[in-house]
Length: 192
Ligand SMILES: [Zn+2]
Image (cartoon, rainbow, N blue to C red; front, top):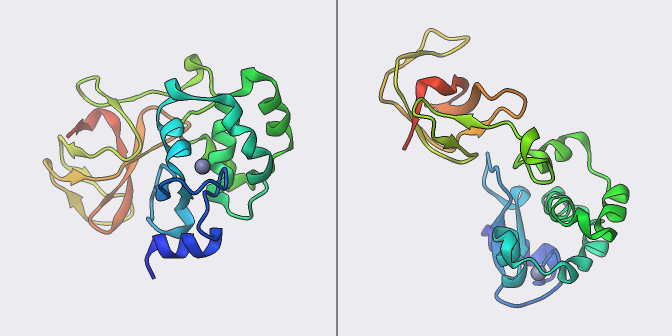
């Protein structure tokens, strides 16, 4: 079965955030390390548009989170947490945020995009040229990199796709070099 049909089955073909049915599509909840049902939700166009573009937010639409934040699926709860965090200043989302419960791992996931953090608290990762790196970016190594715990060396010029940022340290990112997930120092990469 495809991710779409799995999500349709678990949601009864409704938006997992607002139960709408308008133009439902698979929405991957960043940062995605393994694509699939567990890292995705089925979301309608209204929800997807507002998630992706904070300028188009209609706070009232998100009262639907009152129900969907109790979803049994972490991917749904993570999006609920992020949208409530974004809308915190409205008042009522703050109350829901106090009630929503995420397992520690899911909470880390929810916080991974920096949603809900003050701009000043955000950890910014930059490459060798000062370009800001985001989760999911691709980079190229600008010098040979010894892979920790192995005798392997990743050569300068190796591309690393779908990096994830170390949430506690601006100097580190993680990415797969060949089959190995490894930590890479940001000043030795260039965004591509
Ligand atoms: Zn929706």
